[in-house]
Length: 147
Length: 239
Length: 67
Image 1 (cartoon, each protein chain N blue to C red):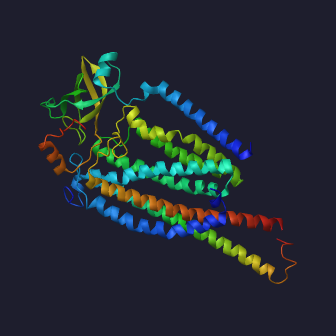
Image 2: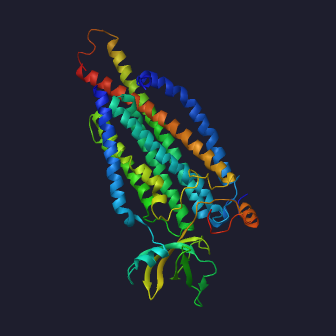
Image 3: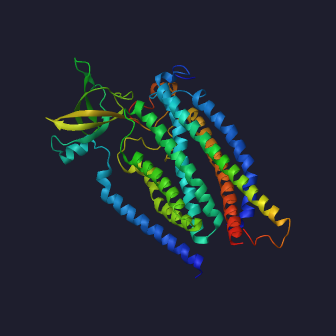
């Protein structure tokens, strides 16, 4: 075996073991790397009250209600299987829409998710308004459904 | 591979490529800028803020592509000890670092109006930040050695170790819940971006790639001259 | 074809323009940095080779003894 050959095999072996090690670490960290939890995960795991976490899902259509004070908003976050009521006081991002993705940070209090921060999560679809209108008119696509 | 190992021949090849890559960048970048800012429609959800995509996404692609070039050259330098491969890896690193920083800054400027935050520690954003530190660490490590060949070898090992980060960046949006949206272009079932928006995206990406090749060639040439200088000075010092 | 005017960027001017400014400046800096490095290396090499040629010219045997 020439020295070049040996160096090549050593390099490939090193890369392979590195890949295996990284995969194992990532698998072990799987749940901790989640940025947010969906309403069904929250329902399944039974998160204790007053523990901070992030809740993510779609804003349930026709669930957004603004309170009389003008800054408090209530809405439901759904993943189509389960949903949770959310209460938030503050400025919402531009992309906050019914049917669109949202990630809220806060904690459960009396069955209601008290959010201290609400971020919008957009989907991977990009198109001009006219195309979106045409797609909706033809019934091929509905807002918030993704693809 | 061995045909390119000869520095003189390599210099001839890159000198022949230079006018083409410079011409392509000079044509594609202004054209991409026109498509991005004027010749493309706003997004149905994001309005005109979607135009940030046309610099953010090509910068992200380049950040990953340049790292691949750097790691591949590093591997060739380690295994076959080709001095030219060493030079390419070292010349690519600062360019990749700039593209990564560009991706993070434009992403932040896009995230604030759309998501409602400049920065979140989700898997995608964090793994791209790690990429920036890999680039910076590589540059620091290579320059930490007095002997350029030893520096290049240490750097190549770091670049290869950091290679695991590339699939993590690419698939982070599929493997974990992230605030960052999933892939739009490179995905099964074709891109989910309207053709009118793909045009500025691909024009810009082509411009960025041609620009990278141009700057890389200039930097490799400068580095070749510096190596020559080193040899001449050593010869002079030894008399 | 913009949603709300070219300069206002439909209200996103404060984000779109800085993003393009950062990109443009970064690309210009990369190009100028690369060109400057190349020019400097070329200059240094020319000086070095010039001095070698000068020293070699008067008497070829003496060149390289003292350096």
